Amino acid sequence: MIPCILQRSMTRKQYFIIILILGAVSTISPFSIDMYLPGFPAIAESLHTTIDQVGLSLTAYLVGISVGQLIYGPLLDRYGRKNPLYAGLILYVFASVGCALTSSVEALIFMRFLQAIGGCAGLVAAQALVRDIFPADKTAQAFSMLVLVVAVSPMVAPTVGGYVTAAFGWHYIFITLAAITLIIIGSIYYLLPEGKKADPSLSLKPKAVLNNFYKVVKQPQFLVYAVTGGIATTGSFAYIAGSPSVFMNIYGLNEKQYGWIFSFLALAIVGSPQLNHILLRKFKSEQIIKMALLYQCSIGAILVIGTWLGWYDLYVLLAMMFLFLLGQGLTGPNSTALSLAPFSKHAGSAAALLGAFRMAMAGVITALISALPNDTALPMVGIMVLCAFIGLLILAAGKTTIRYRASRKKIEEESSVIV
Image (cartoon, rainbow, N blue to C red; front, side, top):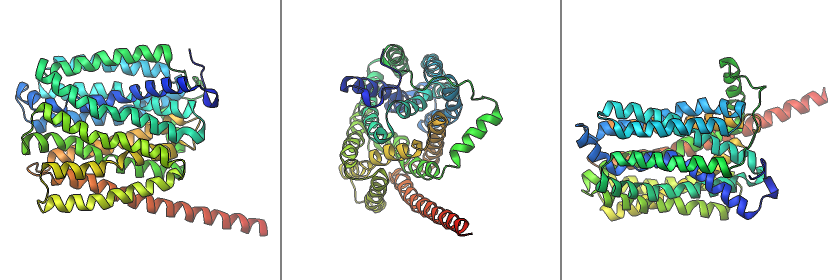
Protein backbone atom coordinates (compact mmCIF):
# COMPACT_ATOMS: atom_id res chain seq x y z
CA MET A 1 0.00 0.00 0.00
CA ILE A 2 1.15 3.57 -0.71
CA PRO A 3 2.69 5.31 2.33
CA CYS A 4 0.47 7.47 4.48
CA ILE A 5 1.72 10.99 3.75
CA LEU A 6 3.53 11.07 0.41
CA GLN A 7 4.07 14.78 -0.13
CA ARG A 8 7.17 15.56 -2.24
CA SER A 9 8.47 11.98 -2.40
CA MET A 10 5.62 10.58 -4.50
CA THR A 11 6.27 9.23 -7.97
CA ARG A 12 4.27 10.21 -11.06
CA LYS A 13 2.51 6.85 -10.93
CA GLN A 14 1.53 7.33 -7.28
CA TYR A 15 0.34 10.86 -8.04
CA PHE A 16 -1.81 9.59 -10.92
CA ILE A 17 -3.33 6.76 -8.84
CA ILE A 18 -4.14 9.05 -5.90
CA ILE A 19 -5.71 11.76 -8.08
CA LEU A 20 -7.69 9.14 -10.01
CA ILE A 21 -9.11 7.53 -6.85
CA LEU A 22 -9.84 10.84 -5.14
CA GLY A 23 -11.49 11.99 -8.35
CA ALA A 24 -13.62 8.84 -8.43
CA VAL A 25 -14.61 9.36 -4.80
CA SER A 26 -15.53 12.96 -5.60
CA THR A 27 -17.57 11.98 -8.68
CA ILE A 28 -20.06 9.90 -6.69
CA SER A 29 -22.23 12.90 -5.92
CA PRO A 30 -21.85 14.59 -9.35
CA PHE A 31 -22.80 11.28 -11.00
CA SER A 32 -25.77 11.01 -8.66
CA ILE A 33 -26.88 14.50 -9.71
CA ASP A 34 -26.23 14.33 -13.45
CA MET A 35 -26.91 10.73 -14.39
CA TYR A 36 -30.63 10.72 -13.67
CA LEU A 37 -31.41 14.11 -15.28
CA PRO A 38 -32.32 12.60 -18.69
CA GLY A 39 -34.72 10.27 -16.86
CA PHE A 40 -36.83 13.11 -15.39
CA PRO A 41 -39.71 12.73 -17.90
CA ALA A 42 -39.72 8.93 -17.52
CA ILE A 43 -39.59 9.15 -13.71
CA ALA A 44 -42.43 11.69 -13.71
CA GLU A 45 -44.56 9.44 -15.93
CA SER A 46 -43.78 6.31 -13.93
CA LEU A 47 -44.53 7.93 -10.56
CA HIS A 48 -47.58 9.82 -11.88
CA THR A 49 -46.21 13.26 -11.08
CA THR A 50 -44.62 16.28 -12.79
CA ILE A 51 -41.04 17.04 -13.78
CA ASP A 52 -41.01 19.91 -11.28
CA GLN A 53 -41.92 17.47 -8.49
CA VAL A 54 -39.17 15.11 -9.60
CA GLY A 55 -36.86 18.13 -9.50
CA LEU A 56 -37.46 18.33 -5.75
CA SER A 57 -35.58 15.03 -5.43
CA LEU A 58 -32.55 16.94 -6.72
CA THR A 59 -33.13 19.63 -4.10
CA ALA A 60 -33.41 16.90 -1.43
CA TYR A 61 -30.10 15.45 -2.59
CA LEU A 62 -28.37 18.82 -2.33
CA VAL A 63 -29.84 19.45 1.13
CA GLY A 64 -28.62 16.01 2.18
CA ILE A 65 -25.12 16.80 0.97
CA SER A 66 -25.11 20.06 2.89
CA VAL A 67 -26.26 18.44 6.14
CA GLY A 68 -24.11 15.35 5.73
CA GLN A 69 -20.87 17.22 5.21
CA LEU A 70 -21.27 18.93 8.56
CA ILE A 71 -21.51 15.46 10.11
CA TYR A 72 -18.53 13.95 8.30
CA GLY A 73 -16.14 16.84 8.93
CA PRO A 74 -15.76 16.18 12.67
CA LEU A 75 -15.86 12.39 12.10
CA LEU A 76 -12.98 12.59 9.62
CA ASP A 77 -10.92 14.63 12.06
CA ARG A 78 -11.70 12.33 15.00
CA TYR A 79 -11.56 8.85 13.41
CA GLY A 80 -9.22 9.41 10.49
CA ARG A 81 -10.22 9.59 6.84
CA LYS A 82 -11.10 6.05 5.76
CA ASN A 83 -13.53 4.61 8.32
CA PRO A 84 -16.12 7.42 8.06
CA LEU A 85 -15.70 7.25 4.28
CA TYR A 86 -16.51 3.52 4.23
CA ALA A 87 -19.59 4.04 6.41
CA GLY A 88 -20.92 6.80 4.18
CA LEU A 89 -20.41 4.92 0.92
CA ILE A 90 -22.08 1.77 2.25
CA LEU A 91 -25.12 3.87 3.22
CA TYR A 92 -25.05 5.33 -0.28
CA VAL A 93 -25.19 1.87 -1.86
CA PHE A 94 -28.24 0.83 0.16
CA ALA A 95 -30.01 4.14 -0.50
CA SER A 96 -29.33 3.81 -4.24
CA VAL A 97 -31.05 0.44 -4.27
CA GLY A 98 -33.90 2.06 -2.34
CA CYS A 99 -34.23 4.74 -5.03
CA ALA A 100 -34.47 2.02 -7.69
CA LEU A 101 -37.28 0.26 -5.81
CA THR A 102 -39.34 3.33 -4.92
CA SER A 103 -42.93 3.66 -6.18
CA SER A 104 -43.79 7.27 -5.28
CA VAL A 105 -42.15 10.65 -5.74
CA GLU A 106 -42.26 11.25 -1.97
CA ALA A 107 -40.32 8.03 -1.33
CA LEU A 108 -37.86 8.97 -4.08
CA ILE A 109 -37.26 12.36 -2.45
CA PHE A 110 -36.60 10.71 0.94
CA MET A 111 -34.28 8.04 -0.49
CA ARG A 112 -32.37 10.68 -2.43
CA PHE A 113 -31.83 12.53 0.83
CA LEU A 114 -30.38 9.37 2.43
CA GLN A 115 -28.33 8.72 -0.68
CA ALA A 116 -26.81 12.19 -0.33
CA ILE A 117 -26.06 11.71 3.37
CA GLY A 118 -23.97 8.69 2.41
CA GLY A 119 -22.40 9.96 -0.80
CA CYS A 120 -21.23 13.30 0.55
CA ALA A 121 -18.61 11.50 2.63
CA GLY A 122 -16.61 11.27 -0.58
CA LEU A 123 -16.67 15.03 -1.15
CA VAL A 124 -15.37 15.91 2.32
CA ALA A 125 -12.84 13.08 2.52
CA ALA A 126 -11.36 13.84 -0.91
CA GLN A 127 -10.74 17.50 -0.08
CA ALA A 128 -9.29 16.67 3.34
CA LEU A 129 -7.02 14.00 1.82
CA VAL A 130 -5.66 16.47 -0.74
CA ARG A 131 -4.79 18.74 2.19
CA ASP A 132 -3.20 15.78 4.02
CA ILE A 133 -1.21 14.27 1.18
CA PHE A 134 0.07 17.19 -0.88
CA PRO A 135 2.38 20.01 0.29
CA ALA A 136 0.75 23.44 0.67
CA ASP A 137 2.29 24.90 -2.50
CA LYS A 138 0.90 22.03 -4.59
CA THR A 139 -2.67 21.86 -3.34
CA ALA A 140 -4.12 24.26 -5.94
CA GLN A 141 -2.59 22.16 -8.74
CA ALA A 142 -3.85 18.98 -7.07
CA PHE A 143 -7.36 20.43 -6.81
CA SER A 144 -7.18 21.45 -10.48
CA MET A 145 -6.33 17.88 -11.46
CA LEU A 146 -9.07 16.62 -9.15
CA VAL A 147 -11.58 18.95 -10.79
CA LEU A 148 -10.42 17.68 -14.17
CA VAL A 149 -11.23 14.09 -13.18
CA VAL A 150 -14.52 15.15 -11.61
CA ALA A 151 -15.40 17.22 -14.66
CA VAL A 152 -15.53 14.08 -16.78
CA SER A 153 -18.68 13.03 -14.91
CA PRO A 154 -20.96 15.68 -16.46
CA MET A 155 -19.75 14.51 -19.86
CA VAL A 156 -20.33 10.84 -19.20
CA ALA A 157 -23.14 10.69 -16.64
CA PRO A 158 -26.06 12.26 -18.57
CA THR A 159 -25.18 10.36 -21.73
CA VAL A 160 -24.99 7.07 -19.85
CA GLY A 161 -28.17 7.96 -17.99
CA GLY A 162 -30.00 8.72 -21.23
CA TYR A 163 -29.03 5.40 -22.81
CA VAL A 164 -29.73 3.40 -19.63
CA THR A 165 -33.16 5.00 -19.33
CA ALA A 166 -33.96 4.35 -22.98
CA ALA A 167 -32.75 0.73 -22.88
CA PHE A 168 -33.68 -0.53 -19.42
CA GLY A 169 -35.75 2.13 -17.62
CA TRP A 170 -34.86 4.80 -15.07
CA HIS A 171 -34.68 2.33 -12.14
CA TYR A 172 -31.42 0.92 -13.52
CA ILE A 173 -29.72 4.32 -13.24
CA PHE A 174 -29.62 3.85 -9.46
CA ILE A 175 -28.55 0.20 -9.73
CA THR A 176 -25.64 1.36 -11.91
CA LEU A 177 -24.69 4.01 -9.34
CA ALA A 178 -24.64 1.38 -6.57
CA ALA A 179 -22.41 -0.92 -8.64
CA ILE A 180 -19.95 1.87 -9.46
CA THR A 181 -19.69 2.81 -5.79
CA LEU A 182 -18.90 -0.77 -4.77
CA ILE A 183 -15.95 -0.70 -7.18
CA ILE A 184 -14.77 2.61 -5.73
CA ILE A 185 -14.91 1.19 -2.19
CA GLY A 186 -12.57 -1.61 -3.26
CA SER A 187 -10.14 0.90 -4.81
CA ILE A 188 -10.11 2.96 -1.62
CA TYR A 189 -9.31 -0.09 0.50
CA TYR A 190 -6.41 -1.34 -1.62
CA LEU A 191 -4.85 1.78 -3.17
CA LEU A 192 -5.65 5.00 -1.30
CA PRO A 193 -3.35 6.31 1.48
CA GLU A 194 -4.74 6.66 4.97
CA GLY A 195 -4.11 10.39 5.22
CA LYS A 196 -4.41 11.96 8.65
CA LYS A 197 -4.58 9.46 11.49
CA ALA A 198 -7.38 9.33 14.04
CA ASP A 199 -7.08 11.99 16.75
CA PRO A 200 -8.69 10.82 20.02
CA SER A 201 -8.08 14.26 21.54
CA LEU A 202 -10.84 15.72 19.38
CA SER A 203 -14.23 15.51 21.05
CA LEU A 204 -17.47 14.84 19.19
CA LYS A 205 -19.60 16.52 21.83
CA PRO A 206 -21.79 19.24 20.27
CA LYS A 207 -20.02 22.06 22.11
CA ALA A 208 -16.57 20.88 21.00
CA VAL A 209 -17.70 20.34 17.40
CA LEU A 210 -19.26 23.79 17.25
CA ASN A 211 -16.10 25.26 18.74
CA ASN A 212 -14.02 23.63 15.99
CA PHE A 213 -16.36 25.03 13.36
CA TYR A 214 -16.06 28.45 14.98
CA LYS A 215 -12.26 28.28 14.80
CA VAL A 216 -12.60 27.66 11.07
CA VAL A 217 -15.18 30.36 10.41
CA LYS A 218 -13.29 33.10 12.27
CA GLN A 219 -10.33 32.64 9.92
CA PRO A 220 -10.79 35.57 7.45
CA GLN A 221 -9.14 33.81 4.51
CA PHE A 222 -11.47 30.84 4.84
CA LEU A 223 -14.56 33.01 5.13
CA VAL A 224 -13.82 35.21 2.11
CA TYR A 225 -12.89 32.46 -0.31
CA ALA A 226 -15.43 29.92 0.95
CA VAL A 227 -18.31 32.37 0.46
CA THR A 228 -16.97 33.74 -2.83
CA GLY A 229 -16.36 30.32 -4.32
CA GLY A 230 -19.48 28.84 -2.76
CA ILE A 231 -21.81 31.36 -4.37
CA ALA A 232 -19.98 31.72 -7.68
CA THR A 233 -19.68 28.00 -8.38
CA THR A 234 -23.27 27.13 -7.45
CA GLY A 235 -24.38 29.05 -10.52
CA SER A 236 -23.77 25.79 -12.38
CA PHE A 237 -26.57 24.19 -10.35
CA ALA A 238 -29.03 26.64 -11.90
CA TYR A 239 -27.97 25.13 -15.21
CA ILE A 240 -28.23 21.57 -13.89
CA ALA A 241 -31.70 22.11 -12.42
CA GLY A 242 -33.06 24.18 -15.28
CA SER A 243 -31.60 22.39 -18.28
CA PRO A 244 -33.98 19.37 -18.40
CA SER A 245 -36.99 21.66 -18.73
CA VAL A 246 -35.26 24.13 -21.07
CA PHE A 247 -33.79 21.60 -23.48
CA MET A 248 -36.37 18.80 -23.31
CA ASN A 249 -39.60 20.76 -22.85
CA ILE A 250 -38.90 24.07 -24.60
CA TYR A 251 -36.58 22.82 -27.34
CA GLY A 252 -38.12 19.33 -27.59
CA LEU A 253 -34.97 17.22 -27.27
CA ASN A 254 -35.16 13.56 -26.25
CA GLU A 255 -33.16 11.83 -23.49
CA LYS A 256 -30.22 10.90 -25.72
CA GLN A 257 -29.99 14.34 -27.35
CA TYR A 258 -30.11 16.00 -23.95
CA GLY A 259 -27.30 13.75 -22.73
CA TRP A 260 -25.09 14.76 -25.65
CA ILE A 261 -25.78 18.47 -25.13
CA PHE A 262 -24.98 18.12 -21.44
CA SER A 263 -21.73 16.41 -22.40
CA PHE A 264 -20.85 19.20 -24.82
CA LEU A 265 -21.33 21.89 -22.19
CA ALA A 266 -19.30 19.81 -19.74
CA LEU A 267 -16.31 20.21 -22.07
CA ALA A 268 -16.10 23.79 -20.83
CA ILE A 269 -15.70 22.58 -17.26
CA VAL A 270 -13.16 19.95 -18.37
CA GLY A 271 -11.05 22.43 -20.33
CA SER A 272 -10.81 25.17 -17.73
CA PRO A 273 -8.90 23.13 -15.09
CA GLN A 274 -6.26 22.48 -17.75
CA LEU A 275 -6.05 26.22 -18.32
CA ASN A 276 -5.90 26.77 -14.56
CA HIS A 277 -2.95 24.38 -14.32
CA ILE A 278 -1.08 26.58 -16.83
CA LEU A 279 -2.14 29.88 -15.27
CA LEU A 280 -0.89 28.79 -11.83
CA ARG A 281 2.65 28.86 -13.22
CA LYS A 282 2.41 32.62 -13.72
CA PHE A 283 -0.38 33.85 -11.45
CA LYS A 284 -1.48 33.37 -7.86
CA SER A 285 -4.81 31.72 -7.07
CA GLU A 286 -6.16 35.04 -5.79
CA GLN A 287 -5.49 36.67 -9.17
CA ILE A 288 -7.02 33.82 -11.15
CA ILE A 289 -10.28 33.92 -9.16
CA LYS A 290 -10.67 37.65 -9.81
CA MET A 291 -9.96 37.25 -13.54
CA ALA A 292 -12.39 34.33 -13.82
CA LEU A 293 -15.25 36.18 -12.13
CA LEU A 294 -14.71 39.32 -14.22
CA TYR A 295 -14.76 37.15 -17.34
CA GLN A 296 -17.97 35.37 -16.30
CA CYS A 297 -19.72 38.63 -15.45
CA SER A 298 -18.86 40.06 -18.87
CA ILE A 299 -20.00 37.00 -20.81
CA GLY A 300 -22.97 36.59 -18.48
CA ALA A 301 -24.29 40.08 -19.15
CA ILE A 302 -24.38 39.33 -22.89
CA LEU A 303 -25.99 35.93 -22.22
CA VAL A 304 -28.82 37.40 -20.11
CA ILE A 305 -29.53 40.33 -22.40
CA GLY A 306 -29.63 38.13 -25.50
CA THR A 307 -31.90 35.56 -23.83
CA TRP A 308 -34.23 38.28 -22.54
CA LEU A 309 -34.53 39.87 -26.00
CA GLY A 310 -34.94 36.51 -27.74
CA TRP A 311 -31.81 36.80 -29.85
CA TYR A 312 -30.61 33.22 -29.40
CA ASP A 313 -31.68 29.98 -31.01
CA LEU A 314 -30.63 26.66 -29.46
CA TYR A 315 -27.13 26.67 -30.96
CA VAL A 316 -26.25 30.26 -30.04
CA LEU A 317 -27.60 29.68 -26.52
CA LEU A 318 -25.38 26.61 -26.18
CA ALA A 319 -22.35 28.56 -27.42
CA MET A 320 -22.91 31.40 -24.94
CA MET A 321 -23.46 28.99 -22.06
CA PHE A 322 -20.27 27.15 -23.05
CA LEU A 323 -18.28 30.38 -22.85
CA PHE A 324 -19.80 31.23 -19.48
CA LEU A 325 -19.11 27.80 -17.97
CA LEU A 326 -15.42 28.04 -18.91
CA GLY A 327 -14.98 30.22 -15.84
CA GLN A 328 -16.38 27.62 -13.42
CA GLY A 329 -13.28 25.44 -13.52
CA LEU A 330 -11.06 28.39 -12.60
CA THR A 331 -12.99 29.67 -9.59
CA GLY A 332 -13.70 26.30 -7.92
CA PRO A 333 -10.24 24.76 -7.37
CA ASN A 334 -8.53 28.04 -6.48
CA SER A 335 -11.17 29.13 -3.96
CA THR A 336 -11.06 25.64 -2.40
CA ALA A 337 -7.27 25.66 -2.08
CA LEU A 338 -7.26 29.14 -0.54
CA SER A 339 -10.09 28.27 1.85
CA LEU A 340 -8.36 25.16 3.22
CA ALA A 341 -4.77 26.49 3.19
CA PRO A 342 -4.77 27.88 6.78
CA PHE A 343 -5.76 24.53 8.34
CA SER A 344 -4.08 21.25 9.24
CA LYS A 345 -5.64 19.94 12.44
CA HIS A 346 -9.17 21.03 11.48
CA ALA A 347 -8.93 20.41 7.73
CA GLY A 348 -11.85 17.97 7.85
CA SER A 349 -14.11 20.48 9.60
CA ALA A 350 -13.02 23.21 7.18
CA ALA A 351 -13.75 21.00 4.17
CA ALA A 352 -17.13 20.10 5.67
CA LEU A 353 -18.11 23.72 6.20
CA LEU A 354 -16.93 24.63 2.72
CA GLY A 355 -18.89 21.82 1.10
CA ALA A 356 -21.96 22.35 3.28
CA PHE A 357 -22.19 26.00 2.33
CA ARG A 358 -21.83 25.24 -1.37
CA MET A 359 -24.49 22.55 -1.28
CA ALA A 360 -26.82 24.68 0.83
CA MET A 361 -26.55 27.39 -1.80
CA ALA A 362 -27.09 24.77 -4.50
CA GLY A 363 -30.24 23.58 -2.72
CA VAL A 364 -31.58 27.14 -2.62
CA ILE A 365 -30.76 27.61 -6.31
CA THR A 366 -32.44 24.39 -7.47
CA ALA A 367 -35.54 25.06 -5.35
CA LEU A 368 -35.73 28.56 -6.84
CA ILE A 369 -35.45 27.18 -10.38
CA SER A 370 -38.31 24.74 -9.67
CA ALA A 371 -40.47 27.59 -8.34
CA LEU A 372 -39.87 30.05 -11.21
CA PRO A 373 -41.77 29.96 -14.52
CA ASN A 374 -40.00 27.54 -16.86
CA ASP A 375 -41.36 28.55 -20.26
CA THR A 376 -38.13 30.35 -21.22
CA ALA A 377 -34.40 29.93 -20.52
CA LEU A 378 -34.20 33.30 -18.74
CA PRO A 379 -34.60 32.03 -15.13
CA MET A 380 -31.83 29.47 -15.68
CA VAL A 381 -29.28 31.81 -17.27
CA GLY A 382 -30.28 34.75 -15.07
CA ILE A 383 -29.51 32.89 -11.84
CA MET A 384 -26.29 31.48 -13.31
CA VAL A 385 -25.01 34.97 -14.04
CA LEU A 386 -26.33 36.47 -10.80
CA CYS A 387 -24.21 34.01 -8.82
CA ALA A 388 -21.06 35.18 -10.62
CA PHE A 389 -21.88 38.86 -9.98
CA ILE A 390 -22.53 38.24 -6.26
CA GLY A 391 -19.31 36.19 -5.99
CA LEU A 392 -17.30 39.06 -7.48
CA LEU A 393 -18.85 41.60 -5.11
CA ILE A 394 -18.14 39.41 -2.07
CA LEU A 395 -14.55 38.86 -3.20
CA ALA A 396 -13.96 42.62 -3.54
CA ALA A 397 -15.61 43.42 -0.20
CA GLY A 398 -13.86 40.57 1.61
CA LYS A 399 -10.37 41.44 0.40
CA THR A 400 -10.94 45.10 1.29
CA THR A 401 -12.00 44.08 4.81
CA ILE A 402 -8.97 41.81 5.23
CA ARG A 403 -6.59 44.58 4.13
CA TYR A 404 -8.28 47.05 6.47
CA ARG A 405 -8.01 44.70 9.46
CA ALA A 406 -4.37 43.94 8.62
CA SER A 407 -3.51 47.65 8.48
CA ARG A 408 -5.32 48.32 11.77
CA LYS A 409 -3.48 45.45 13.44
CA LYS A 410 -0.15 46.77 12.16
CA ILE A 411 -0.89 50.26 13.46
CA GLU A 412 -1.86 48.87 16.87
CA GLU A 413 1.32 46.79 17.05
CA GLU A 414 3.49 49.77 16.12
CA SER A 415 1.68 51.93 18.70
CA SER A 416 2.30 49.36 21.43
CA VAL A 417 6.01 49.22 20.55
CA ILE A 418 6.30 53.01 20.75
CA VAL A 419 4.56 53.06 24.11
